[in-house]
Length: 80
Image (tube, rainbow, N blue to C red; front, side, top):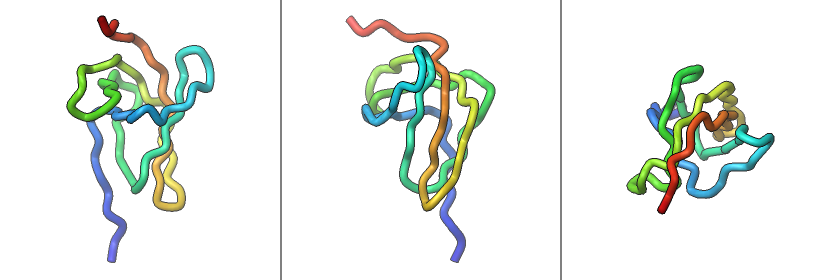
C-alpha cells in the first residue's frame, strides 16, 4: 500500500506555525503533502477563513508521516 499524498495549493496554519525570523515561519502538518515552492501562495488561519497573507515556501521536508514547510510571509492582509 502506498503512502497517500495530498496536493496543497494554500497554507492553512490553524495557529500552529512557529516564527523562525521576522517574516520566516515553520509549519508541520500531518501526512505527506506537496506544496508549490518559490511562488506566491495564499495563507489562511483556517480553511474557510479570510486570507491572512501571501507567502513563498522555500523548503518542504517529509519525515515520519509529517510534512514540514519553511516559508516567508511576503504580504500580510490587515484584519479589521
